[in-house]
Image 1 (cartoon, rainbow, N blue to C red):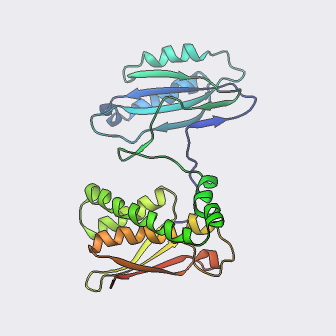
Image 2: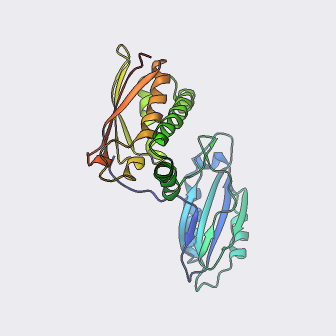
Image 3: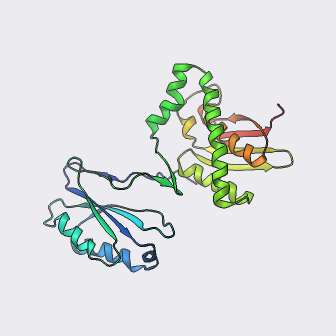
Length: 267
């Protein structure tokens, strides 16, 4: 995986533009009919209304699929109310709501709440907040906070393993692949399990582009305490034993990636 940022969020901010949002729902059965997206976008193309941003929720069996579009009405004679009425009449649409600007050019989705990932509620912690959590509090409370970060991560890692186990089952290859994918999806970094040895209860992982460790520059020691805890908790559930761990390379020290080693705890 190479760096290829994905912009999250369901909003558009274009000062000076007349922007509206349009929320809609479609039944799950319609996803099999390839023409519905063509029909929807063709309407806006024919009406000469630019679609600035478009998202659809992940399909979940038995539940309507939710979509949102952000439309540019700048210098257009079209009216959002007229568009709403047209969309409502389409046979594959189940619900439509207009989202009005908060201020000129700024439209934020205020219809869909709460955000969920695989059916479980989430909250998004942007970089300034995460930096405060990882770095600023350490600066105020001292190095003892590093142990707190580790233990928070450890407890979270144990719970994440249980969740992953429910989703993909106990096949090791599928478990580690899913763990790596989720680690990247939530933005922690690019995780790779390099070695897992059940007989020795030993594991090695590397994390590229660690968000936690990116907050520290020219450090004299590894700084991935939360990440180390997270992976230790996950592996402790996999091995069903206590885990000792250490970070042997770290981008905060100028290394190319962060490397973690995990061993059976003897205490």
